[in-house]
Length: 147
Image (cartoon, rainbow, N blue to C red; front, side):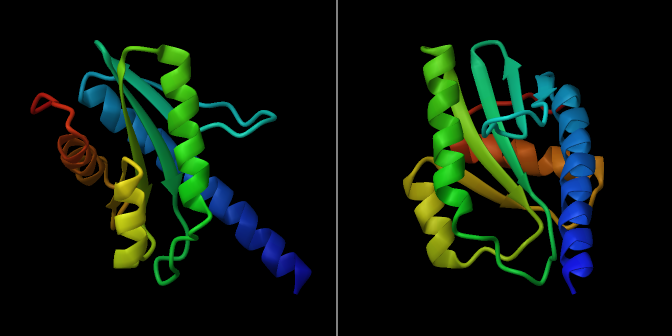
Protein backbone atom coordinates (compact mmCIF):
# COMPACT_ATOMS: atom_id res chain seq x y z
CA UNK A 1 0.00 0.00 0.00
CA UNK A 2 2.82 2.41 0.83
CA UNK A 3 4.48 1.75 -2.54
CA UNK A 4 1.25 2.59 -4.32
CA UNK A 5 1.02 5.95 -2.53
CA UNK A 6 4.64 6.77 -3.33
CA UNK A 7 4.13 5.86 -6.96
CA UNK A 8 1.05 8.09 -7.17
CA UNK A 9 2.93 11.01 -5.62
CA UNK A 10 5.81 10.51 -8.04
CA UNK A 11 3.45 10.28 -11.00
CA UNK A 12 1.72 13.49 -9.89
CA UNK A 13 5.08 15.24 -9.58
CA UNK A 14 6.02 14.05 -13.10
CA UNK A 15 2.63 15.16 -14.44
CA UNK A 16 3.08 18.60 -12.87
CA UNK A 17 6.59 18.87 -14.36
CA UNK A 18 5.40 17.80 -17.83
CA UNK A 19 2.42 20.13 -17.63
CA UNK A 20 4.68 22.97 -16.45
CA UNK A 21 6.82 22.54 -19.57
CA UNK A 22 3.71 22.82 -21.77
CA UNK A 23 2.54 25.91 -19.88
CA UNK A 24 5.98 27.43 -20.38
CA UNK A 25 5.76 26.69 -24.12
CA UNK A 26 2.30 28.28 -24.32
CA UNK A 27 3.55 31.36 -22.47
CA UNK A 28 6.41 31.74 -24.94
CA UNK A 29 3.87 31.67 -27.78
CA UNK A 30 2.06 34.48 -25.93
CA UNK A 31 5.35 36.43 -25.86
CA UNK A 32 6.16 35.86 -22.21
CA UNK A 33 9.60 34.88 -21.00
CA UNK A 34 8.84 31.91 -18.79
CA UNK A 35 11.00 30.34 -16.12
CA UNK A 36 10.15 27.01 -14.62
CA UNK A 37 11.20 27.33 -11.03
CA UNK A 38 13.81 24.74 -10.06
CA UNK A 39 12.83 22.12 -7.51
CA UNK A 40 15.10 23.37 -4.73
CA UNK A 41 14.62 23.99 -1.05
CA UNK A 42 11.90 26.38 -0.03
CA UNK A 43 8.47 26.88 -1.51
CA UNK A 44 8.41 28.38 -5.00
CA UNK A 45 5.75 28.76 -7.69
CA UNK A 46 5.98 26.38 -10.64
CA UNK A 47 6.36 29.14 -13.22
CA UNK A 48 7.14 32.84 -13.20
CA UNK A 49 6.75 34.57 -16.58
CA UNK A 50 7.43 38.14 -17.68
CA UNK A 51 6.30 40.29 -20.57
CA UNK A 52 7.09 44.00 -20.37
CA UNK A 53 5.82 45.25 -17.03
CA UNK A 54 3.58 42.20 -16.49
CA UNK A 55 4.52 39.22 -14.36
CA UNK A 56 2.51 36.00 -14.16
CA UNK A 57 2.86 33.52 -11.32
CA UNK A 58 1.47 30.12 -12.30
CA UNK A 59 1.00 27.17 -10.01
CA UNK A 60 0.14 23.86 -11.70
CA UNK A 61 -2.07 21.45 -9.79
CA UNK A 62 -2.36 18.35 -11.94
CA UNK A 63 -3.67 15.13 -10.49
CA UNK A 64 -6.67 12.85 -10.55
CA UNK A 65 -9.33 14.71 -12.57
CA UNK A 66 -12.08 13.16 -10.45
CA UNK A 67 -10.52 14.55 -7.25
CA UNK A 68 -11.12 18.00 -5.76
CA UNK A 69 -8.21 20.43 -5.69
CA UNK A 70 -6.91 20.66 -2.12
CA UNK A 71 -7.95 23.84 -0.31
CA UNK A 72 -4.43 24.02 1.14
CA UNK A 73 -3.40 25.23 -2.33
CA UNK A 74 -4.95 28.65 -1.61
CA UNK A 75 -2.58 29.92 1.12
CA UNK A 76 0.36 28.44 -0.78
CA UNK A 77 -0.52 30.35 -3.96
CA UNK A 78 -1.27 33.58 -2.07
CA UNK A 79 2.19 33.36 -0.50
CA UNK A 80 3.80 32.82 -3.92
CA UNK A 81 2.01 35.86 -5.37
CA UNK A 82 3.04 38.06 -2.43
CA UNK A 83 6.67 36.93 -2.65
CA UNK A 84 6.85 37.70 -6.37
CA UNK A 85 5.11 41.09 -5.88
CA UNK A 86 7.64 41.92 -3.20
CA UNK A 87 10.52 40.85 -5.43
CA UNK A 88 9.42 42.84 -8.50
CA UNK A 89 7.88 45.89 -6.82
CA UNK A 90 5.87 48.08 -9.20
CA UNK A 91 5.23 45.53 -11.93
CA UNK A 92 1.73 44.11 -12.38
CA UNK A 93 1.61 40.57 -10.99
CA UNK A 94 -1.16 38.12 -11.89
CA UNK A 95 -1.46 34.86 -9.97
CA UNK A 96 -3.01 31.87 -11.72
CA UNK A 97 -3.63 28.28 -10.68
CA UNK A 98 -4.08 25.85 -13.56
CA UNK A 99 -5.66 22.52 -12.65
CA UNK A 100 -7.37 19.51 -14.13
CA UNK A 101 -9.06 18.79 -10.81
CA UNK A 102 -12.53 19.76 -9.62
CA UNK A 103 -12.88 23.20 -8.02
CA UNK A 104 -15.92 23.69 -5.81
CA UNK A 105 -17.65 27.07 -6.35
CA UNK A 106 -16.94 28.21 -2.77
CA UNK A 107 -13.22 27.49 -3.17
CA UNK A 108 -13.17 29.29 -6.51
CA UNK A 109 -14.75 32.31 -4.77
CA UNK A 110 -12.07 32.16 -2.07
CA UNK A 111 -9.30 32.13 -4.68
CA UNK A 112 -10.91 35.05 -6.51
CA UNK A 113 -11.39 37.06 -3.30
CA UNK A 114 -7.63 36.77 -2.78
CA UNK A 115 -6.74 37.91 -6.30
CA UNK A 116 -6.00 34.43 -7.64
CA UNK A 117 -7.50 33.21 -10.90
CA UNK A 118 -8.13 29.47 -10.93
CA UNK A 119 -8.47 27.94 -14.37
CA UNK A 120 -9.40 24.46 -15.48
CA UNK A 121 -7.72 22.48 -18.23
CA UNK A 122 -8.90 19.20 -19.67
CA UNK A 123 -5.82 18.10 -21.62
CA UNK A 124 -2.10 18.51 -22.10
CA UNK A 125 -2.72 20.31 -25.42
CA UNK A 126 -0.64 23.49 -25.87
CA UNK A 127 -3.40 25.24 -27.85
CA UNK A 128 -5.92 24.66 -25.04
CA UNK A 129 -3.38 25.73 -22.41
CA UNK A 130 -2.58 28.91 -24.36
CA UNK A 131 -6.29 29.77 -24.57
CA UNK A 132 -6.75 29.12 -20.85
CA UNK A 133 -3.77 31.36 -20.02
CA UNK A 134 -5.11 34.11 -22.29
CA UNK A 135 -8.56 33.91 -20.65
CA UNK A 136 -7.00 33.80 -17.16
CA UNK A 137 -4.96 36.94 -17.86
CA UNK A 138 -8.09 38.74 -19.06
CA UNK A 139 -9.83 37.74 -15.81
CA UNK A 140 -6.82 39.02 -13.87
CA UNK A 141 -6.94 42.31 -15.74
CA UNK A 142 -3.88 41.65 -17.90
CA UNK A 143 -3.89 42.00 -21.65
CA UNK A 144 -2.31 39.58 -24.02
CA UNK A 145 -1.95 39.66 -27.79
CA UNK A 146 -3.70 37.00 -29.83
CA UNK A 147 -0.42 35.04 -30.11
